[in-house]
Length: 375
Length: 144
Image (cartoon, rainbow over all chains, first blue to last red):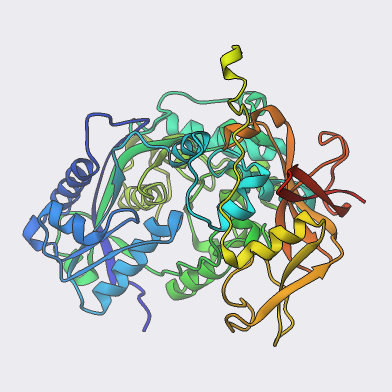
C-alpha cells in the first residue's frame, strides 16, 4: 500500500533554539510546543490520539507528562534521522487507522552536551562499561563530539571527488545567510563569509569549527492527520506525498563499507517513487546537516547532483531562500542550532512544513510546492 | 606543578575495561602479534570482535586468526581538539580508519611520521605495536 497523499501535516510550532534553557525543563518545552502545534492545527488536546517523540525519553513518560492518552505511541531511536522518521511512521500509523491525530514532538531544555559530559567523566578516570567505543575507538583519541567521524568522511570525499574547502564553506555561508533571517535561530542576525569559515579553527583537519553544529536546547512539534481530516482544518495542509526509511545501516561511521555514501541512497528513491515524482520536480530541500559534509553527501545520494559533484553544485547554485534551489532555509542545524533530544533533524520537518504552507514570512521561497526533507 | 602532585598522573589514560571476549586480542598485542576474529564455518574476517559473526550470524563459532598487519589507509583526520583530556598533549595526531589486507577496517593512529606532511589516503601501512605500559599494548600503524 502506498502512503501517497494519505496524510498531511496540519500544524506546527517551535520555540527559539538557544545554547541553553537553564530555567526550563525538557517536559516544559515539549509541552509548550505541543500546545502550540495543537492550537495551530485548530485542534484540542483531547483530539490527539497518537504520540511520537525522540530517543532518550520514553514515549509513555512523555504521554503521562503531557496528559495525553494515545492509541498509538512510539519513541524513534535512529539518532539524527529520528525526526524525519517520525513523520514516515505517523503517516503509516494514520493510513493504517491506528490513530487519527498524531503529535510528533522533539526537544530538550537541559544545558547538555553529551560529548562534553563523557569527556569530563573520562577525565576523572570514569569510563563507561566496555563497548565498541571504549575498547576500539577511545584508546586512539577520538575528537570532541562527532567531529572526528565527519572529518574522516570529509577527507575521503575530498580524496575521491576533489571536493574543495571553498565548496564546503559555501554551504555554511548560504545557511548562515538563511539563519540570519530566522529569529528562532541561534545564529539569528549573524551571517558569515567564506573567509570566516576557512579561517575558523580546525577541531580536526580538514573539518572547520564553523562547519559543525552547535548543540542547543529548544523544541519543535507538528500534528499529522489524514488527508481527509486535513481538509476540514484551518491551515492549508502540507501533504505527505512519499516517505522512505529510516534506512540507517550502522551505528558508527567506520563500520560502513562505503563511508561517503549515505543511507539516503535508498530512502530518497523510495520516497520519490512513492510520490510519483523525480528529483527534478522538487523545489527545495531541508536536509540533515550536523556537519557540512553530511548534508552534501546526502544531497548527492538523493540525486540533487551526481555522486561526487555536490561541490561544483554548491559553487554554481544559490541555495539561500532567495536562490534557485533553496536548501535549509531556516539555516539548518549549522545556522539555527542542533536541538537536543535528537530534535536537530526535526527542525527540517518544521521548516519544510512552513515553506510548503507558505508561512515562512521573510524567508518564504518563491516556489515551495514540493520539499524533500531528510532527517 | 607542585611537588605534592608528582604522584598524580597528568595523562589519564583512557584504558578500557576488557571483557573476557576480547582478552586474547590484548594478550596477543602484548606479544606483538595482531589477531582478529575469523568465523570458523564461513571463513569471514570481521572487526570489531562481537558475539556473533556479522556475515553468517552464527554465534560463538569464531576464533582468533593471526594476520600480517599489512594495511592501507582508508581515511584519516588530524586531531586538534580531543574528546579525552589525556590526549591534549599529543596534538596534532592522526586518528585513522585502517584497512587490513584481509579486508576488515579498524580505528587506529598513524605514527612514526610527520602527520602534517607524510600521510595520504591509500598509502601502504604496517602494524606498529605501541607498549603503553608493561601490561598494555596498543595496535597502531606506520608508513610501510
